[in-house]
Image (cartoon, rainbow, N blue to C red):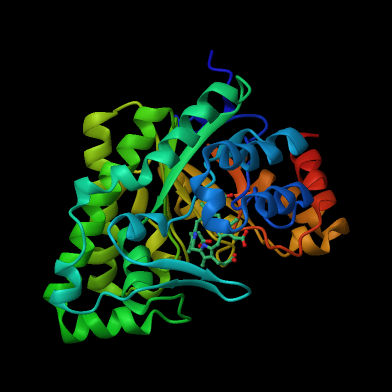
Length: 342
Ligand code: CP3
């Protein structure tokens, strides 16, 4: 029997205690992360220094004993590998050179040219595959094409993805060619992570919720389906987690339609609704509100128990509904894990 609980849940097994990991589990809420980041100098240097990126990936495993480690990197490394400028403004977030015209698109590199730039990331994966405990699953990841495109088009994070929606209206052909390029690059990137030792991959579509109707089908569902089909053709045994965040009613049937082995859900949908409408199709991941990692106490215990109980009838991976925030208290993470496992 496989001793990796995450792989068992992703294979469809209903377990007495769900595996647990946390989005952004390596991050600023941990003093040891802040120390290693200071040693690296800045966030991007941390991503591109394999020893240090592996170190911060391992920190939450040592401290909390999560069932999975997620590669420390960022979804915006792919645009950078395609030739976009990328930097992080302290206290504000990412900034990129923008892609909004056929000329901008022509200046990007082809999808298969990304590996040279991304080779340090593959080295981080190789280190982790060697160093992780036997029972800990290594997760690789990439941003989904729509979410990555929203950053490339706007040159930054936006509350409503307005610039990307505007490009769809004004020059759909350019938008679709950009999406196509990112899709190809994502297939190449995730395949290389798997070849380096990632045992599971996750596609983060953080802004899927801003797509509606046919646009959701064309720009969230179809690219996920294509990426998963290409990965399954090369690596049939490697499970894929899809996270079309804030998809709401569109979570229903998403895993079946795309071939994902597990659907991750955010905390804007209730666990009860997800159990009844999504978990009927297979494994789900989620969905404790990240705010509990700040506030803690009895509400954290009660809500953690409620989520475990609600998903008990089928395969479930315990996680937050979105990333843990820098103001979270590590003690609350320990309390969450203890509650799940007791
Ligand atoms: O989950 C993990 O621990 C693995 C590493 C990881 C990071 N980013 C590290 C990171 C993963 C999986 C991501 C994904 C990511 N990055 C997403 C999708 C998931 C989501 O959160 O919706 C997005 C949209 C990004 C882009 C990004 N990276 C933004 C908008 C920011 C700035 C916001 C912020 O939290 O500061 C980042 C920076 C970033 N990525 C940090 C970390 C740990 C903080 C950097 C720091 O140390 O200052």
